[in-house]
Image (cartoon, rainbow, N blue to C red; front, side, top):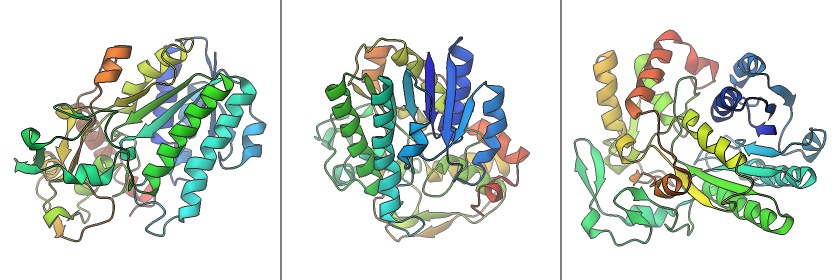
Length: 356
C-alpha cells in the first residue's frame, strides 16, 4: 500500500508517519511539505529514518502534486491550523483559504488521478461559535464546567459535542475553510467513487510540537512557563477558565491504519476524535500543573474578548468508539509530562519556531 502524507513535517504529519511506519509493514510512505513553518525542517531526518520518500512542495500548487507518485491513500494533514489566521495579519484571508481549501481541492484531484482514497484531518472548530457560546457555564476548580441540566442544544451530550452539533457560521475563517474542505471531500468521494474519511480532531498536543498562543496551546503554555516567559489569560474575565480537550496524534494512527485497510467500509462517515472529558483542562488548571512542575511564575490578565474565542469545547468520540473500536491510549497527564520533559531538554524551542 502506498500512502502520501501532506504536511508531513508538521507535528501531526510527522507523528502519524512515524506511527504508520511502525504499524504498516510493507507500506510505502511518501511525504509532501513546503517547510514554511520555522523548525519543520528538523523533522526531515526523522522522516528519512522512517523510510519516507520526501517531496518538497506546496498543496496550493497543483503542479507540485502532479509530479507525485500514484498512491492508494492520501492522509491530508496540511493546513494553517490557527483560528485567528486571516484575521490578525500574519497571513491574509486569501492565503488561509488558498492553503486550507484550494490545497484540499488539489489533494482531491490527486486522489482522483490515482483512484485513491482520502483521510482528511479536520477540526473541532467546524462547530458553531454562537451555539457553543450560548451554553451556560459554572466555574469549578479554576475551569468552566457546562451546566448540563440547562443545556438543550442538539448534539450536546454528557460526554461533550458530538457530530450532530451545529456547524452554523460564524466558525472563524479557519473553521469555515475546514468545513468547506469536508464537504468537497465528500462530494468528490460520491462523484468519483473514492473512499473518504473525515476525522474531526480536538486539540492535538505532545512533545516536539511548535506552539503559539493561537495553536498548539498546551505546548506553547508549558514551554513558556518553563522558560519564565510572559503569559496572559485573555478574555472571559482574564481568569483562564476556558477549557479544551487534549489528544496526542500518535493515538490517531491505529484508526487511520484501520480506515485505510477497510476497503472503503464506512466511507463517508464523519467522526470526532478527542481525549474527551477526562482530558479537558483550562489554562488556569494548566498553570497550576506547571506550578507543581516548575515552581512559581506570574501570569497576566487581559479581559479583552477576541473574535472566535469560546468558553468550553470537548468532543464526544462515541461514534468512533462504536464504529471503529477506537480508544484514547495516551492520557492527558502523560502528554503534559512529555511536553514538560521536552521543554526542559530544549530551552530554545520557542526561538527555533520563531515564537519568541
